[in-house]
Image (cartoon, rainbow, N blue to C red):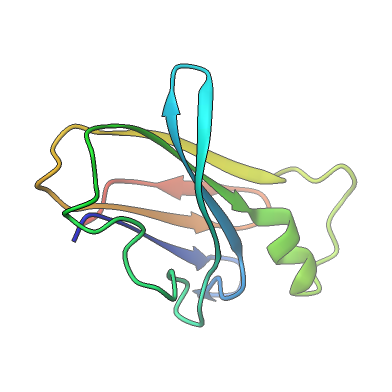
Length: 117
């Protein structure tokens, strides 16, 4: 399955439909844009995995989630400046033959992630 993500809005108890997500491949301080996407109604990439098994490579990656943009679009009044603007997750892929699922559980004031299956 390669690499996938899923975002759940813990404030409203639903998938984060419409959230913008950006994926980068990283090398040290350098980040190369791989793709930008908007999550579907299930809080997932509408095109399926971000990388399939054949394309995923050992290395480091970054996912950037536009948290404040998502909650503002939902009509949530946020203080200025926002507590969370963008959530950036840097992670490594050590085994190209395994599935890496990077979920995000998020509210305007907190987030959690883990390596899912």
